[in-house]
Length: 264
Ligand code: AMP
Image (cartoon, rainbow, N blue to C red; front, side, top):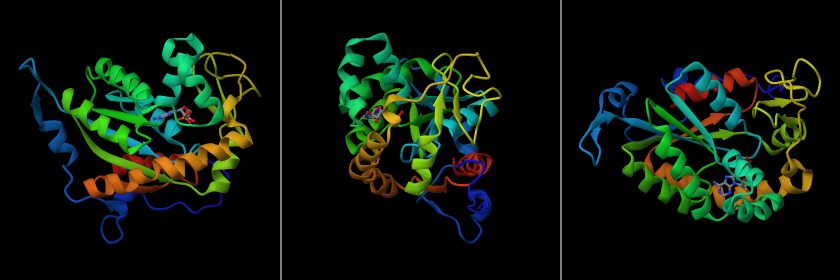
């Protein structure tokens, strides 16, 4: 749970670096390096260097909530959730949406190329004025991570951190069981941890809140299984690249946001 979990707050990662840093990286450029660095695009126009931050973690680990708060605090951050892009495609009944629908209902991963095409398209139109792209839910397989590298190289961006939100299974189930979303504006809630002011009603736009179809117990169990089998290999992938950061994703949400902010 976000606010009621008893897990003691850990020190922000950046405060731990003295002796007990949980950051795993070989050589990391500092934020200043990134801000100063410039790349030349194919059009020979010098443009600001963009960081890509991948948020890793099981369903309910808080990736979307944390990313939303980071963006609210820094307007040069951009956030995309591959799940949101796919749900929108399903809602609009595009070709991609129709293809993805069955996989999503079963809690399985949609084909790599399909989701990668959506992310590529999003990255192409979201770079303007951005310092940092926060990817939530993508990549989810090693193949997707390889595609991301190619896409990043093509748009003058570089992956600077893969942040793994560590949350135990019992907490994930508890969070997902209480998760509610707004179909109107996309705002996220939890019945006890992040409740709306009026029960069942979005604070932002007044729409009736809904439960995601794939948040049923059976589907969540399948999604966790898929996460273990297909997404956890990314930990080794990013550790080998020297960009993996492990962050506790339990306890009050503000603490998790701080730890992620420190880690990127
Ligand atoms: P999420 O909202 O991230 O929990 O994603 C919801 C569902 O969308 C997942 O259970 C998958 O079916 C699909 N999905 C989201 N992101 C990806 C991805 N990167 N690769 C494959 N399938 C994905």
